[in-house]
Image 1 (cartoon, rainbow, N blue to C red):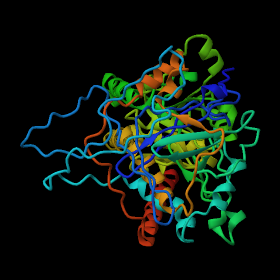
Image 2: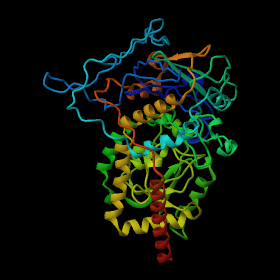
Image 3: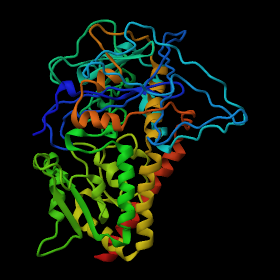
Image 4: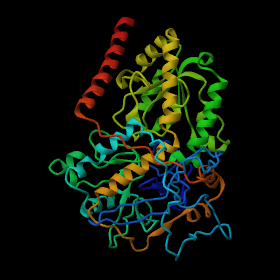
Length: 512
């Protein structure tokens, strides 16, 4: 078993007016179950600056933008005749570990400098692009509190016993406190109160039914997934910065590796079956999926494999790299205990995703469209549904390959790290605007900075931190948050999804 420690903790991200800030996550638990209620290490490496202030004492944070760029990219050279962007903060991230394991933040004891504008942008600079459509769900996530006029301290405090850590950003610095004695222990209760709470487990916990009379009384608890019966506020999970315990690389370098594999084995040359590899012991629906493996009596067109993470660790993780699992024409996605981090890796393969129906959604999967990005699979009839999808897809290769390309295009573009960071920025900024009190640093809180996270780390954990580190400030603004969905748009999306499923049911009738 892999057992991460609380000391391995870390990393999420924090927020801003132009961009965003970094970090905090937490790790613990009994490990190797891919989707067990364990807390995995996460980290995001950035330098940030922030300001507080609001006449209503609601929290408004403006941070230096450290937006993700491919690591080989260098800053553009600006000439006197070219439009110059707004530049915030410093130009490069400098990391100094002193004796090699220092946890001291270099700014300790000194006031954080405010962001400074080098030169305002020219009016000829084009406006930033609109954010991907899934950003529109930020409004619905926060609607219980927006409709009530804001988030009260009392509502936030209700999340204390549900959370793994709390996070406060003040004066350009991020502070956290976590449960004492691990996830089973209580969070410290000193006053003053928190900025936000985050739960790192798999299962959503803020049940809407418990607050039917007054939804704004629910805790605005940040977490990684939710369903239609819960009010949790969605946030990107740790795995975008890598999962060192199981040797899964950060998202940006993974995308590069997956693109190389996709070019190496074109879709038409892949094995004409549906593929899945994972831990079936974390949920009944995964265990049930294994019934669809080929037997001497029937072939459901599925090739399904059990992932033994403990054995993989002992042997150096052979065959466990998701970028090397793109050799089949179809990839199956099935949830774990709730959502699974595997979905984005499966999407990136240029193979159509056969997505087993689930009520759980993470922040980006709400932007996936049935019939365009994936083929929906009835969870109650997995085996015949998978067989139908593969048979139909092999008989219609052009349209099927296009669906695979749409899914991987979503992974590369809609889910590029720029957009992951911008999502963090926008959800945290919108949350901050709703706060009706001013958080302050809790007693015994720990300051978070690149040094305190990176310097004590070693092995793959430190390697992945450095691989996902941001090296340059961005030279552009974050994407523009699109408006909330209208009632007509929601109805249209529902009808479109129903139409796709109706077409599949008709295909099933024709094939029976």
